[in-house]
Amino acid sequence: QVQLVASGGGSVQAGGSLRLSCTVSAYTFSKYCMGWFRQAPGKEREGVAAIVSDGRSSYADSVKGRFTISKDDAKNTLYLQMNDLKPEDTAMYYCAARWDNYLRLSFDYWGQGTQVTVSS
Image (cartoon, rainbow, N blue to C red):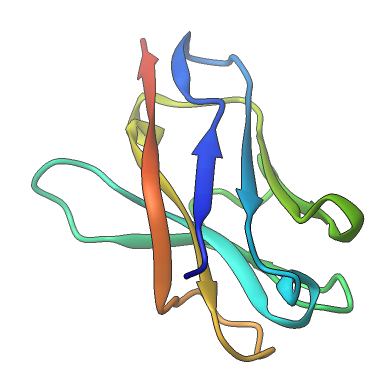
């Protein structure tokens, strides 16, 4: 069974930065669409960023220019660099996958989340 283990969340002030990491226990990690989504209490799930095998990426409009997704195929690790954080970025962030290689902000499988809290 594939495991996605996210880490790196925390509490920061507005304008600060965090880097989330996700280790994936799947040797086929590099072949699929990987990404992050978030969910805040009382709000719908929001796809934040996605990346596919050739490195192309996609972002939600709400995070474009502030967040950067990247991956290290050799380490089976996914990253999300979050800069200029805003209070509205506060949410549980989940590392996720979709078992194809299409660049979309929707996912089929995810692990436990990591909490990001941004104070004003």
